[in-house]
Image (cartoon, rainbow, N blue to C red):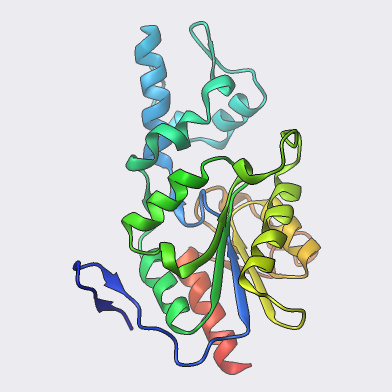
Length: 241
């Protein structure tokens, strides 16, 4: 149940009994719909170079993202990879949580579930501001991004980055051996990190989740349509355990 706070924002009451469950959430494509952020970033780069951008559909295709991460994509004389972190640092105000996500996070908080957020991309401060916009920051015991890796760790893979940050976050919130652990994300890196951590992996179909495999030996333990559905699965499993 959520109730209106003094500011009008919807907040959750404190849980009567804290749960021995922790959920590690991915950010981009899982909680955060960054399509408008990314689209605006690419269109602005084209405008700055006096070049006509491709269609929104083409920009948001996975193959377009791959052309950036490989370093191949240039817009005019600009190598897009050199500027891609601006998506998070400058365009986060255009991002939004997927529908139902905020209420789902509040429901988990009301059930006493510990929550942390880790991202293998940058933007810890921008992420905290996003959560504050939805009055959710206090429900996350830790928020870490690639910004929080030790200096010189830029070559760490996404999966290893998430694992390192998740371990730090779990320690910070007091997660103990034997406590239930879930990891919710939209990429194979999230699944790989969950396997390393011994967490139950819940994949979501938002973001890049349409590419997740459903096979038990290669994909997540459960595939949900979105983070809100993943939260419902977690709450159901907690209540029936």
